Image (cartoon, rainbow, N blue to C red; front, side):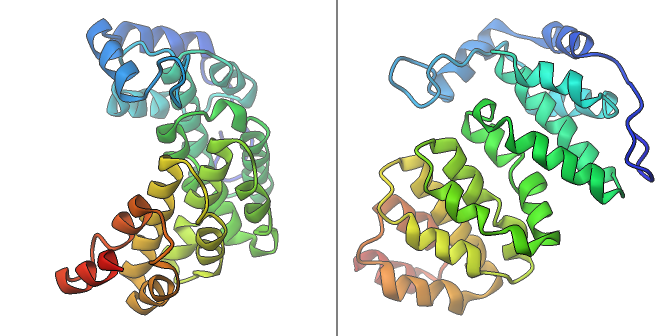
Length: 246
């Protein structure tokens, strides 16, 4: 990809990326990752397949194939192998960050949103949503209403994408979206959503403690325990005990 124009120069193929990942695979690590990411029957990652490649190794491969065109990234995203999909997402993140062409950045985000069903585990979400959708919405605040729609999805991962996309806004002191989503998701039943919302509330508190404490004063009594525990993690011990006691 030419970062000045946003045009893509062909750089390898999905097959070559898969081959490099395969050469680094480890059956022992694959077995561990399958357990860690809950791939068993009835678990949130049911059916996901691992070959046992660590994230730093995937990042190095993503940098080497940073100019991979979208049609080849699509082939990675379509793979049942977790590391193939994550490496494809890491390449997208690289391309979005390096491009100076707004139209190409939008193309990347639209590609990402059209393939969210393949962003189907928490690490895939967490390593992509803030840096793709989140950064896009920082630049285009008029489009942020999509987050509330995504938060109503029956798909766990789409809801988590919505919450994690608020991270870049939080860093800039923009809290409206995360607070609205946190309130809307108080009744969410999934532990991974409790963790995501609590995490983003904690990040908001790092930027502006009063924002976090105001939210907690209104909702601590009804927040899921895990969400509350994540949200108060960085508070002074006395304040943490106060809110947990409520």
